Image (cartoon, rainbow, N blue to C red; front, side):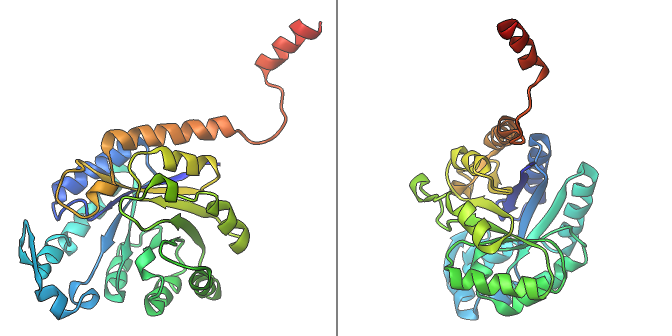
Length: 274
């Protein structure tokens, strides 16, 4: 089984289309299946009080300036859509509000994504599920009752979905990965389960693929020291290339589980058994 590998650009583009394109290029070169971004309507997701509060960033001294600096506009999303089509890679985004989800609908992306932080937003979940588009659902910061509610929404809407085991710490410690939960979730909800990681390095993600994660999503960056809250929990482009290569090697190693004598082994058999 081929693991679906998603390179999460998120907001690591820092509002710069050229950085986004470089990250898309890295995903293509590495052999990823898709890239993912994040979309927010700032005034819907955050309160005025919060947006007016101080925060020093490359774009100014308020939270609003920082948040708006990280958002792409329609013209920039049009360019991303065009660029990904030219490069032959899927793209999609996680919306943090209904207006953003409706904005994304115009691009007719193959997939939707529900971020862990959105699992309590029933109105948004209903909006996504009614599209009937295959949806990756991260499960960080949740309990079974909350996952039950999300699964019910998607099944009630006959919307195909895939859960993603996730620990929403940035960066996550390896000992908090609890990868055995991948199979627990798969059995409990009778569905595919992937892994969305925020750890340093690639070991945990490769192990997740070995344990049967049907998809792997990792934040990527050009440089972990760049400005941004997600950079430290991301992997750089060389790590991404290595991770994809190792996951593909794991797939070969795991095989298909059937007892088959290869031609090479048959030659050995002939020699040793006469």
